[in-house]
Image 1 (tube, rainbow, N blue to C red):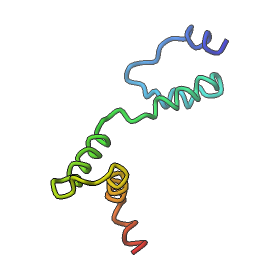
Image 2 (spheres, rainbow, N blue to C red):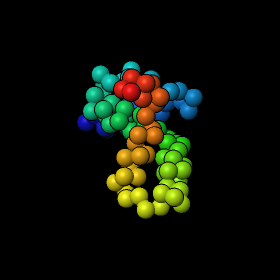
Image 3 (cartoon, rainbow, N blue to C red):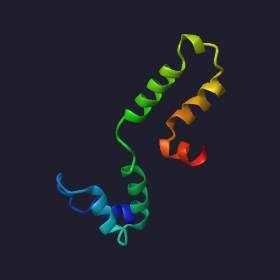
Image 4 (tube, rainbow, N blue to C red):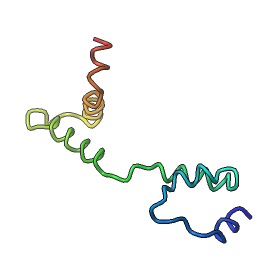
Length: 90
C-alpha cells in the first residue's frame, strides 16, 4: 500500500534535495523512508578506497615486501588514525 501510494505521487524536482524530501515524508511513508535514508546516505565517491590503496602502496615498499596480509592490514589501520589519537594515547 505504501509503495503504491508513493509511486502514484508526482516526482520531485531535479533541484530538490532527496534527503529533505524523505525527512518530510517519513510520517507518510515510514518504511520507504528507512530504505531511502539507508541508500541515499551512501558516499558516492571512490576517494576513500583510492586513498586506502595509496597508503597500502606506500607501506608495502620493496623493503617490506614480505609483510603478511594481516600485518599490512594493521599498519594501514594505524596509519589511518588521525594525529589526535596518537597524541592522546602516547
